[in-house]
Amino acid sequence: MELTYTKHGDYYLPVLDIPAQEKVPVNRYGRMHGNYLKKNNRTTYNELLFSGRLNQYLAEIGEQSEKMFALLTEQYAAAENITEEMKEADQIGWVRAMNSIRNRAEEVVLSELVYC
Figure 1 (cartoon, rainbow, N blue to C red):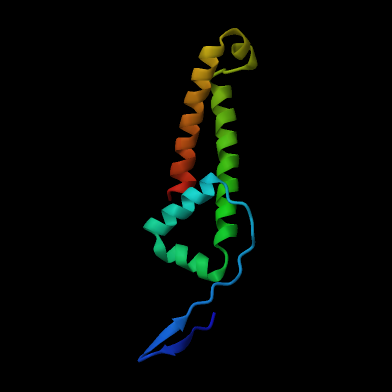
Figure 2 (spheres, rainbow, N blue to C red; figure 1 turned 135 degrees about the horizontal axis):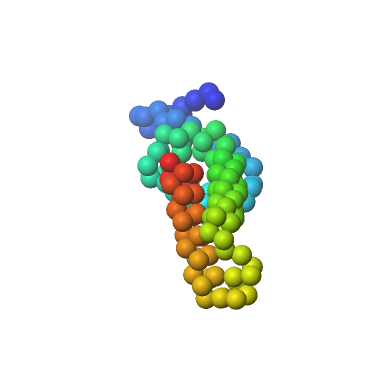
């Protein structure tokens, strides 16, 4: 990307044209990662933004996060023997166990993909 300048009064200011970005949906994990980058890693955020790849990158992070969350939830439920039979027999216990599993899975996703 070639940087050009325009004169405004006595100063030359860079012309920062941001290329059009592909319109892709970004889920909540992608938005959370974008906010994290904006606050904690401005260099990477600006590089992605000015190259026109930010939305695509955040969509990919969001997709990876959703897949990881689903996989971890499934694996934790299998490891702890949380089944549909338990759901029928003890609904409150099943909800409690699944909420615990979801919270742990989300914590892993956030630490491994979103806030890194």
